[in-house]
Image 1 (cartoon, rainbow, N blue to C red):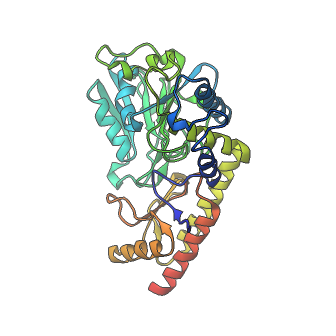
Image 2 (cartoon, one colour):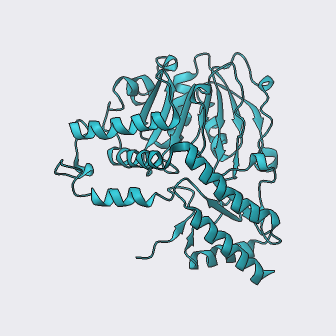
Amino acid sequence: MNRVYTFNAGPSAMPIEVLETAKEQMLCYKNSGMSVLEMSHRSKDYDEIINNAESNLRKLMNIPSNYKVLFMQGGASSQFAMVPLNLMKTKKADYVVTGAFAKKAAKEAEKYGEVRVVASSADQNFNYIPDLDSSIFNDDSDYVHITSNNTIFGTKISNFPKTKTPLVADMSSNILSEKVNVSDFGLIYAGAQKNMGPAGLTIVIVREDLLGNVMAIAPTMFDYKTIADNDSMYNTPPTYAIYICGLIMEWLLSIGGVEEIEKRNHKKADLLYGYLDQSKLFKAVVKKPADRSIMNVTFVTGDKDLDAKFVAEAKEHGLIGVKGHRSVGGMRASIYNAVPFEAVKALVDFMGEFEKNNL
């Protein structure tokens, strides 16, 4: 079996150690006599799985005790509606629009109240992060919504804004990649399929004082308090996805936690951006270093035919998923936590060879 290096934007690369453990436990989880896929979510064995997953996530992110951790379905896109349904008390919210998903989040929230776009980088096709000085935010907003990392466009917010109202962050594509102070946020949400596990699981980290204010029109399953009060077990949660998520938390702890993975991530990103900045053929889409994502690196040659040739030849060399999103074009290398340094080194080596042959 020959495994390729995957740079997919999501579902993304998984740690080999996690895949091996899942393989070993597929038919029988510990002494349960059954697969996790067959296990009741109300069983003692599954209690251990979900409780350990939450406990280890709390350790990794140093989540304070006055925050709830919710394991949910529906993807981050469901949170575009759940956030306003739960937090829009006065029907006013500030949104920072720095990419496609931030734009979708703002549009969805418009169904439930007044959305004020206080900053946007749409004027340059989202290739930078606008100024987020605290003066741009409204004191009467129920919350401020940001997208910390923009998967499609390859930008990230390096310095989180200071806000008087709760700060809400979609961290789907960079959660657990760098240290963050959870206390700076009222709510954090993230789809799991980038850094935390397989598709089908969404994690919400929410401060307890923000619970219990859901709009009357909200479905029961869209009430954070319902999920919190039932320990994420109001209905059957995505059990296997949570199990894999738990294994990834164990893997992260085993290598030194977020502090260590942050070092590894910067090393990978520095290698790739370093090559792009000296290349005569490839150019990084995001010019300002502080705005560059260390998870999603976007780049182009300036020639669509040459871009397509690169993507095709990269696949032949076992480098998968480097085609850029249609709204940006070119290429994108998603170098999430589980993508090893060797994969990025192989990509950079191939880029050098391709450049030599195509200049």
